[in-house]
Amino acid sequence: MSEQDLTMEERRCLQMWFRQAIARLEQEEVTAQFIQVKAADEQKSDTHRLPVVKRRNRRAKVFTHGRELVY
Image (tube, rainbow, N blue to C red; front, side, top):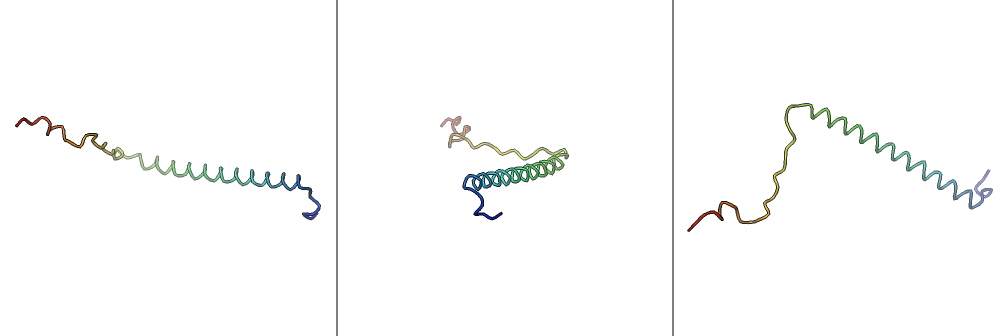
């Protein structure tokens, strides 16, 4: 069977089917990679140390102790 034997509707159906199959395969690969990374992160977190916490930026540019000073 050659491409000339397929109708436009059949070709479009096959293209959609292949696109769906490729998308599903990519989704499964991403899921497997996510699970692998998550498992590696959980193994690292078995130690007693907590993750580093970022300090929030101050909202005001003037320090609070500077406001309390009286001249």
